[in-house]
Amino acid sequence: MRNINLTKTERLILANQYRILAALYPDQAEGYKHRAEVLENGYTWFYGNVFQEIYDGLTPEECEYVTDVMVMYWRLQESNDELKTGRLDPKKLSFPGFDGNNETAFMGFARYLMEPPAVPSQHHGTIRRFLCELLPANQG
Image 1 (cartoon, rainbow, N blue to C red):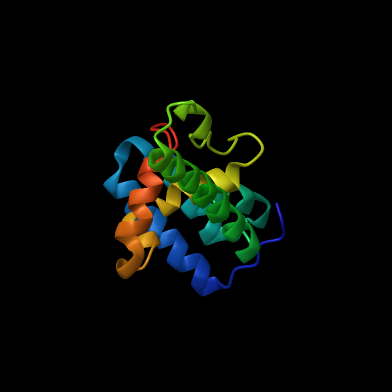
Image 2: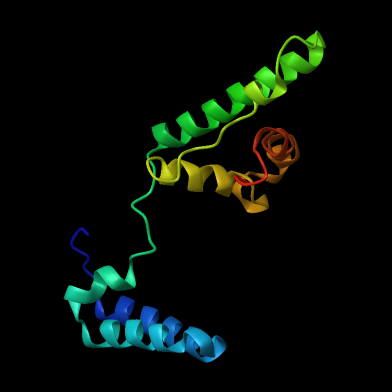
């Protein structure tokens, strides 16, 4: 994991958040308390444990790639629906999803696109409709 630098203020805010989470979720309290202690004491060697669930993220180009792939499959399905020839196997036009082992960030972004806050409200209905049609149940 890359070097993570936090100010004392950032450490205090995050530690307090973990203390609150420990109080709210007693079954996970031990892990939250451990993270709070790491942050409170500045044990930088263990910051990787604190931030293990935080990914580096995608570039705008990678986000555009994910949406382009998803739109491509949606358009294939739309075209097939319009043709109604019956010669195409609809399963071949279904989006297979992104590989969780090799395209984890892409898979996560595709799932994020399915959530209401991901897309501005004026576009959300249209985008969510085609994404729901596009993604198999196990992806969305």
